[in-house]
Image (cartoon, rainbow, N blue to C red; front, side, top):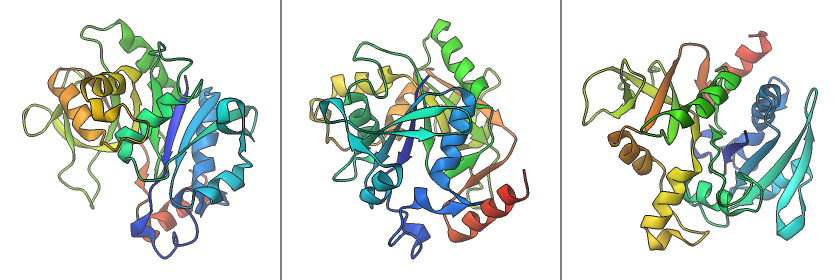
Length: 264
């Protein structure tokens, strides 16, 4: 499987740290946050990662030594502990929101998918979270889901509600389906971790149904697409009870630094 890391945000809540450094390059335990994600993806067997960049994009591109490859694709090689990962960068001149950012990444040649007909699920990671979820298991769940009916289009890793988000986001039913809280009260309300797998079909169907989204610079959100899929019974959920930190403030950045430096 391939993966995408969302790294194009402004990091407003982290200012002034992000005035001159993009949030994905802020260091924790001696490494940029972005490289902690890459190490976990390397260990899980992922070999190609797409990273979208926007705010202070040049800092990220220069950090990885990105160059223009075939068909103008910005790419780089990154050496992990054991393997080299191929990185492809999707540059956003204006913020495209999560849905538009994924759509743009899907348009890049042999980046997030092999071609336009490839419907293999991919991992999606918010660049400003850290989670010790079992990525190989999540990848196996994504592949196995292709045999289910109805066909799931997404799988969300959900966590217990943190103090800064006590009401949670979605409901996880006993059968492992994710529901929008407003429409279904059966299950445990949990918080979306920022870690998931998606089928390219979710985005492609949305683009096919909305002419204005066909442009590679279209701006649209992912959340409404996920909620529509939930109502159709097409979103799976997994309750992760391990470590998770939303690195949205300097205080939580310091919390993660302490956690990783402790060897956990």
